[in-house]
Amino acid sequence: MSQAPLDWVVFKIAQRCNLNCSYCYVYNRGDDSWKSRPPIVSDDVVEMLGRRVAEQCARFSLPRFVIEFHGGEPLLVGKPRMQRIIDLLRAGSPRVELRMILQTNGLLLDEEWVELFDHNHVSFGISLDGPPEVGDRYRVFPNGQGSTGRLLEIVNRLRRSGPLFDQTLGGVLCVVDPSVNGGDLVRWFVDNGFDCFEFLLPDGNYANPPAGWRGVEPMRRFLLEAFDAWYTMGKRAPQIRLFETMLLGFMGIKPELDALGGDLRKLCVVESDGSIGISDVVRFCQGEYAVDRLNIFRDALEARTDAYNIAELQRPCAQCEVCPHLKSCGGGYLPHRFDGTSFANPSLYCDALFALGERMVTAIREDIPASLIRIQPVPAAAHAELSL
Ligand code: SF4
Ligand code: SF4
Image (tube, rainbow, N blue to C red; front, side):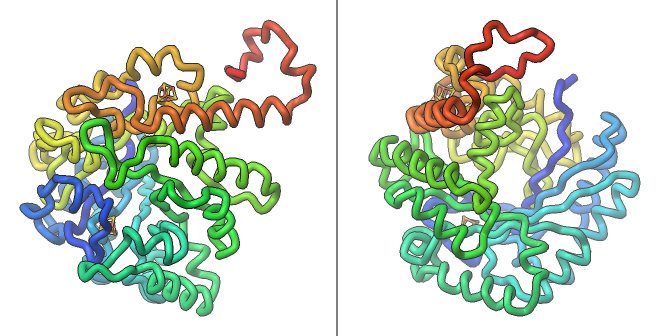
């Protein structure tokens, strides 16, 4: 039996998108599986997932479960269908506290969508890589035109119509362009009213690096600039999950973020045809890692852990095992470790993550009293696993 029962499903309710972002792992990293799946999820799949969630919660006595709506672009399902999907899932798991979240590119958002999310207690995140001169390099419509200006207009319009948009907005996902200044980007988000965002490192690995890859140095510089800007912001500092999770790791709190070695047994991706693979992102590693061997019509959600040997797959490599920053970095994101045959490597971004860990240690050392650092050894009962 798994040590960490799965309590989170990423549900791909739409397989198409109104954008064609150049870095997108769904469309532009060599995996075409989306073409053969239903563009919009059917009632049958939604109802079956509801039953699987109820079964999982009963088996492991889980009081709550997270369903994260994803695509493609999930808003392409339309409002009536979205409401039906929510209703069917809740009806399928009546004794479970279902927490629903959604990730959208935001280009179809309007007041009615925001009201629908608010009414159903669905928190949503938007994808925004920064100002148009940054975001439009990658986040483009199928005709190649940039989309960021349009998204910012929508955000500004929704904010003018009342507080509901910001109350319902869970956060922003930002795929990092390491050629920009990290500090400037953090300040841009704050100045534009975004107080919770996440930096995603562009998907790529040793076998299939990100487009335009110029080595890890630009990412190292970006992360240090961003961290320094964030750490010195005081009360204005936004929530940035990457930094917060790493800092918590130094305090012995195990990362739950998949990008930082979080336990992948706790989460699975269900596609619009009900199939379950290792994950949607890992699919760009291709070969056997792109094959879906499970489907919710045949298999329990928990079957994924053993079917894909997730525990072994995510085990940190020998170099990570002895790294002083393993507790904060976790070895990085699984698909970023792949070398064409195996995941037993440090992240492609290892040097950048290591440098960030070093900078965090320095910052913590400067901020805690020297007398505390000198205490040796730490009594077992009070041991907070600070690897300073
Ligand atoms: S909005 Fe998301 S799903 Fe659509 S192309 Fe961009 S990254 Fe891919
Ligand atoms: S910094 Fe590098 S070696 Fe250390 S845990 Fe992270 S990926 Fe592994």
